[in-house]
Image (cartoon, rainbow, N blue to C red; front, side, top):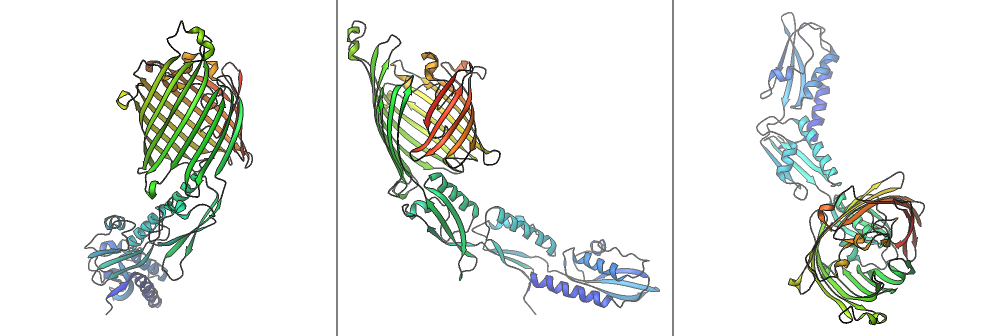
Length: 575
């Protein structure tokens, strides 16, 4: 006697016996049905079986009707065989449905499930009651649900390697999850393999999960190193249900040399040279050097290592030296000199969030220009402001956008808390909280909607001055287009609190040009109680984005509420 009956064999055997029974029934005598009974059932009641039968006492025997009744009983799911026999009874025929019950389910054994779901989770999905006759119909339905769940959860190779029940009632479900043998990278001539592999949250020996693979390719796309990414799965010939992940890629330009110049009513004549490399020596590090000259002269250096010593920690620093020529409202010229920098350490959090801690230092000195020395009778000494900023910032950010430069879906969120004070060795004391959230949605064809809301709240706690650098300003290409900073009075231009809304509809014309329609709204306030949605400035307009060898150039023309126009030129997307 066989120790195990495979479910596949059960179904085939039942089908053979079923049609054998029908063949035997083809020679039935045509007579009146005087009785209908069931034989062979021990656990499933006669009543439950006979509810599936449409033939009634008093009917004439009919081959098609009896075939349908046998099929209905079989489809109850409790039986491995259904047959019909007849015997004479009270001048007619007693129709006897002979059934063979499936084994009583005594135990469920699950194997191969550990990398996917817990045993309890699978038992919950199968929903089979111990101590009852195994219902194959219910089991097959729930196995299908389990298969669909595995597919929907990304386990695209997962399948049932074996499903069987022994005569002792032990149901065994053996799952083959589908494993990754390795990752092959093709096309990287500069980027080190480890830079690519660390962005993909699946390695050799892991269960294949398409969601993790897609997440990895989103990470690679956001790096901005590659112009083409194409993943494929390649079966390993000698291994069962095992594949290689093949990454076909084409590297793009990662170094940039930007230069330009212009005139701003608030900053005067300006020019800049900006050299950056976002994949330094193919190791995934980002470095940039910038020189800005004109009424403001700036030298800056920044560096970012996303995986410090191959760990999950990121590290970054920046240093700068800035000198600005300015004029007071009394037409007194002065020079503002700032030197400073920052150092930061970050680490990933669950659900795509990341946190970082930054220490910032800046020393600012404001000195009267020599041409104003005749004003010594109204000022004490040549230096009238000397401020030292020391602050710590805790930030949380999450980026699920599908493309670093041209997102059409996903979001970017950034929340930060900055605290500065004498407890860190400075003389500027304030707390600043910022929330910047961005959403991207597909529009018509390949168009995209881009929305941003930025909220900034600052609480100054010092009278030493110099806080205008830490206050929020209004007007210009990055905040409220259609306005220049000089359109606002000084007290309205810089303030403690900010509320800003930006909406853009982006229309790609080709790989080099993108058109933009935009609307901006925002304001800054000195007092928290004054913040109101009814007290916003509005701007609207259109623009174009041009991808050039020196980076993306942005040209916007905006109108304010007085219908006055303002041309804005900058580099990169607004948000």
